[in-house]
Length: 271
Image 1 (cartoon, rainbow, N blue to C red):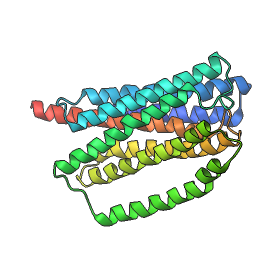
Image 2 (cartoon, helix red, strand yellow):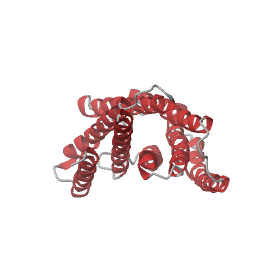
Image 3 (cartoon, helix red, strand yellow):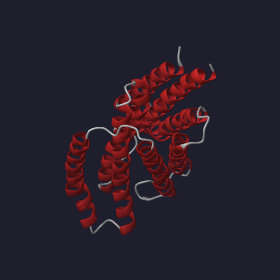
């Protein structure tokens, strides 16, 4: 059985377990707390490991290898942030809503920089290398869809948070940073997914499809988190945690597909 198939099975089992615990609340609030805080750590480390395996398969240190290295670093920072969050809430008993933003939030914010840089570098490399960029109408359609979504987010979430006199300035910055940062990840991920789909092989575009899916999951989760946390409604066992966990596992799957793709290419070169 291929490692990617095993990872798909692992992903399904983790999500079913996560959903079962959250819906049944078996084990009470304590188990909900442990699952809510520790499962993202597990999913993040799985993504971290598979991204590293994908990175190792690149022989030349070109723009593609650098891009995957930056993605690996970004997810690594997310893993550190998840671990800090779990330590603060479980180990030290901190109320994370009362102590927002925490040091974990600072690490998360830094993690967005290499993630975005990696995709920007990949796009630049494809463009400079003369690869097909696709139909401008597709970019126009994507721009319209993104503009509509951005408008809705700004009007219904960001502006109300900015106008809220009870929320301090630092909290407002972080509440705004997460959804904006996620959108800035989704846009290049969708573009790269489209560009690689033009190459005619699904094995090439699959990693970018899964990366885009992972970032979309983060975006949905962070938008809901920003709203719920702002309203003091977020707590352990919230179903939006499933989106974060599935996002990490989607990124892990992206790394696994990229690893298999590079292995196949390396074997052909060796022949």
